[in-house]
Image 1 (cartoon, rainbow, N blue to C red):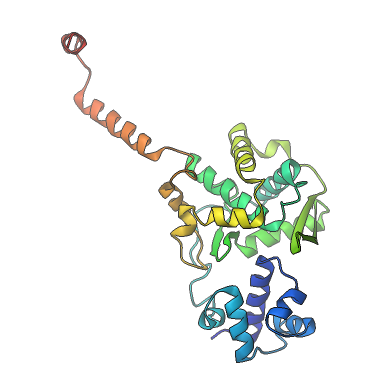
Image 2: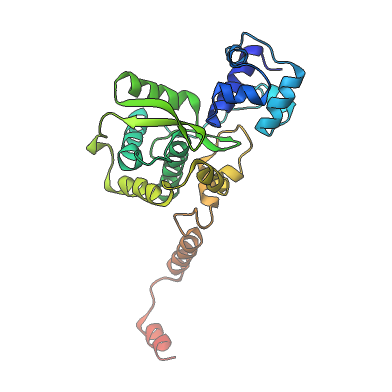
Length: 276
């Protein structure tokens, strides 16, 4: 069973993923904002009725809300890639330079753009751009909290990034503003091409649209809730998510293997088949 403090942290995390203020969530569970704040800080328990209302809002069972994420294996599975904080910093800055001024690009959209950058990179080159882990959550893939927050908090501390809340179409939105430019030496031409492709395809989507779009991607679909999403699942992608025609590649590879076994074609064979 989850502790009171961990339950508060989980409720806060899920609330923020919905870009909802404490005041808005308080109305859902029929509490005051101060009570919600106390719950999230682990200073107040949650009644059975409040749990039911919160679980209904998050579209999960009460048992799922009370489950200890550590016990479910959350964040236990790791992809075998080294996380590159400097790379993540520069990807964030580059994305913000290119589309951070769009009113729809809040934290939710940024999360999904980062996810597609890394999984497209893995699908094409066999390794992600940042090495960041992503977790399957109800509203789509999100960066693993520890790795992501450490980088973002350092960027804020170094005055490279500013994060502030605002209201967008009646909903709370967490905005990121780049206070400096990305390092031009951070990426090669192929990496820039991947980031630009993701921005071109997806940066105009609203938070809801990009969440729904991400739900159709094989890596998210084939991963259990609260689990780290394996990069290998990028090879199970289909259109419009797939960046590589894997079937054609496999056929080419099979054809090459066959030719190797056949050996070099003689002139007689060449003339025979040419004149058929």
